[in-house]
Image: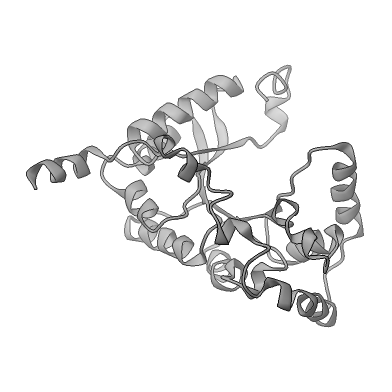
Length: 250
């Protein structure tokens, strides 16, 4: 990516990346490494990645936590906007927004699953999306096809998946593109998209009700398959100095 952004291209893109660190030290290290590898002096958006546990917001906003790192980076001109991502449970997203409010902070963006199955199970669209619209926070919709798992249900097409996500009040619908025909698929979906009528939307949701009931096609919610920080807890970093001090006094 860093090589591709050279020769004037950096000025033509909105560049975003993520960090897993929960401590100020770890987050600072990860951000600086990203800037070095991307061969740029700033990113347009940095996101706290994989906020999937209830302790994640507490750690991020703790004294010596990752939020201190991204705020310092923004002040230094290394970051323009700040957001967070997560895919596990809408209640965790709401708690992250609550912790931010308690610290007098409003996120610029939130990235979360928005798809035809989500509407029926632990729904980010029902629980989190209205709050983001209310606070005028940018909405980044991901997992529109659940890395292809949703398509295995056999009840929806890729175009229907993309059109459903685009029909929501999203700022961006993210879709993975690993080969040219998938790029063509995304372009065709964008060209053919029209706001859905209530009848069309209800018919689409009716087709997915049964398949979505227990989350078996949204593995990012119901398994650890997509939880990279569960497989690599060292990416999170150690406890903050404040927590370590409490542990010593105990």
